[in-house]
Length: 267
Image (cartoon, rainbow, N blue to C red; front, side):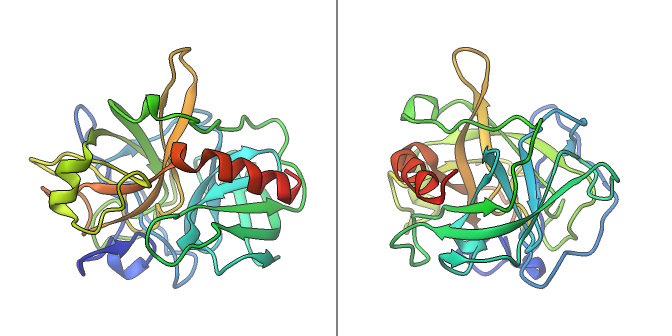
């Protein structure tokens, strides 16, 4: 996020994802220029993810992140796309943590579905239909109830590793704790309760998502030990600032709409 109040975590100039909490140590990953001028922010304070650790992570060519909802559909943020309809301009990169890995799977988009009624506040989710299935890569289930909207969450992305930083070549990961709505509302009066969920280190800061991480998943383990997506990187003020947690789309609130949208896309 950038330094100008409520900022969708997409503008390259604004910064990069900052994941650096708990036992995680800051990482100076090799930086690379943002894919284009509309790219989103990275994780601040993070460490490098291992190959195959989060196999459903996707990098999108407009500079956002996403997660494989199905073999042919990527779940991302509404603010990362320009409305709904046919769209062959997006390239999804999957299957690697190093964006320059020769084994990267690259697939073009065919259609985009932006959340119905999205106007820049809340409802920050979108689906991207791919031209062909991404095979042999696990998908990330979404939470269908708010039972997992608590505790500690994982975040990952190729966004900046500090506010105002560059996009990253290697996938970074970090852990952020849940922040209750009342506390988050104190930091952000325009928080859309029920549609958005907050996470971050309120007292110290230091760990967060940032520009270039938009659209990427916030996730945790379910009761069976499997990963489940609970959030989508959306917005915040700056990156990893004390008292300013990251704001994420609350996936469980939109689970039925996301499933309906995926069915409409044939995915």
